[in-house]
Length: 83
Image 1 (tube, rainbow, N blue to C red):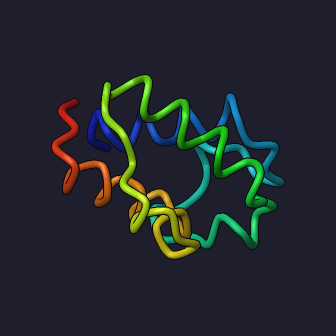
Image 2: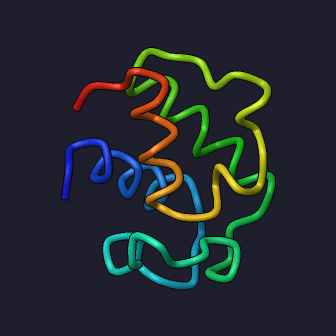
């Protein structure tokens, strides 16, 4: 598990009230199936922006970007996040 993936899981654990422990979710599991809501995505996004000192561009604010731990990890990597 990368440092970025760990940060995503930490943000999910602290900001989202998922039906499964964020540490136990598979990287490709659908977070919306685990209880993630659009309001929770905003909280997760803000936590990740603060953690990595970056801003999610408007075009990244899609359901697909927040679909899984892997999709969030990949988005953060594409935005230049460093573990």
